[in-house]
Image (cartoon, rainbow, N blue to C red; front, top):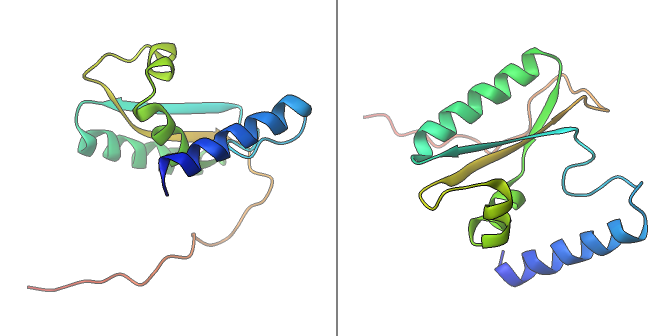
Length: 118
């Protein structure tokens, strides 16, 4: 997805929010908490993120990864300053956390794994 398309989506969502701040937002779905995983190395941040996701599920909470937030903060100096990020820090993931409205007794559908045994 191009940066222009993301920017337009972000502006459109902001305009909807400006008209009525009480409707459910389409970025975080009114999640009461966000966790930004910041790490100088993607592998460490990724491993920490997956463990946090497992723990939220174990606590009966819901979570989802917001790649939209990571992308928006990636090259936006104002967002980086607001978050207090240093120049060498990068956001690895953003987890939105809250109590889910719906519970599923299955995992998210995924494509079949492609495994090569050596």
